[in-house]
Each structure stands twice: as C-alpha cells, then as structure tokens.
Image (cartoon, rainbow, N blue to C red; front, side):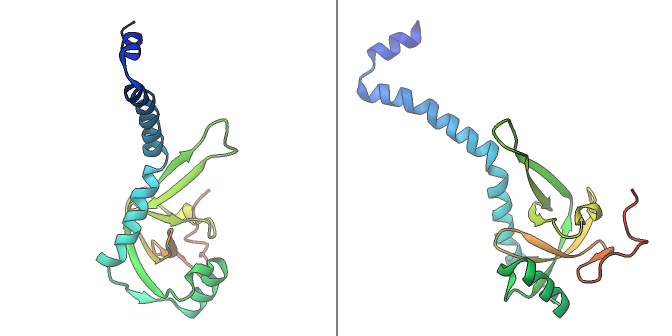
Length: 161
C-alpha cells in the first residue's frame, strides 16, 4: 500500500525516477556479474608490459607458428614471463546460451589455452609461463618447463591420464 501511495503522490519526474531506478540497478548488477571479470582481466593485461620487461624475443619457428594462428601477433616479438595461479571463470550459462563461456586466467591475466591441450599442463598454483601479449590475451609459448611451442611435449612430461 505504501508504494502505491508514493506513486500516486509523485509528479512526472518522480515517476520517471521510480521507473528508471530499478532498471538501472538491474543493468548494473548484470554488468558486474557478467562483464566485470573481463574488464579487470583486460586492465591487468594492458598494465603488464609497463611493469615487466621482456626476457627474450620469439624464435623464428615460434613466430611462424603463432603468426599463422594469430595474425594480430605479426610484429610482436617480445616474450614475457608470467607467474601465478591458474583459474577458470564461467562467464555465461543458462538456458538461452548454447554453452558456457570460459575466461582462463593466469595470475589474473587472460590467456589463450587452445594450443595442444595446454590446459593440462597448468596447475592451480605456481605456474611459470613465457607469453606473447596480444590486445585480448596472452599466448603461451612455454609453460612450467614441460611445454614449448614448436617442440611439442615429451612423453615423460605428458600428463598422466
């Protein structure tokens, strides 16, 4: 009853605020629940090269393989060391989506894990990766001393299944 009385006493501007405020709150909640992990990760990715120096440049075989898979890497040669924990955030799910969308993070920086099942070599804590940075994610070139792009994986280093 109290809400109906407030509505009846409100002028046009007041009614507009009463209608707009819940919509704005819902929109803000959706943004924070759905897109916040992406914005934080993107900010960390942009700041990473300012606070870290490259350790080497791409080898020719690595450059050739990566430029075929990621055309946006053309001209990017610096390899950085990225250390930290690996985690995955499910960002989309529900009955209106055909599948879940995953955000893979290494020390809070988005990484691409589509090469050679590389996610099997990532551990929950203590990863050391050599990466090349793109605008959207870091591409792993070497990982934990067990994986190196262009050389594949030795049988001894392959994960046990």
